[in-house]
Image (cartoon, rainbow, N blue to C red; front, side, top):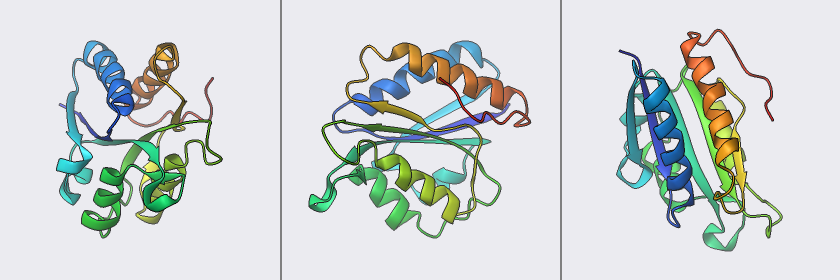
Length: 164
């Protein structure tokens, strides 16, 4: 049975809410898949290699007084505990959340993409970016989740190049 490993970093609950919406959809429509969900603060390097597909989800923070950074829990996972992980050929999907009050609105996304590229992973679908409160953006999450399902059900043959 194929599996999707989701690692999420949420402190205010927004990322957790988006991941919750997504997992509800996936559990219903990807019944043959096993979903593994782990909080970033509990994850280790080996967790990035678990499952057939990896999904990383992070909010954007002003860590160290600098805006546009990863959630501190995701930062600690990716840059400390998993800095040496090899994602060569690993299928990856990304979710970034942010706030338009800041110049680097959803800067966590760029950090996630850099990590995946530096560690030789393969993004299989354009990143889902949620700006401001996720409440009221459920259709956007649902649409992205449907595109993700098409991609993984197609044995990764379908690479989405854009979505609205």
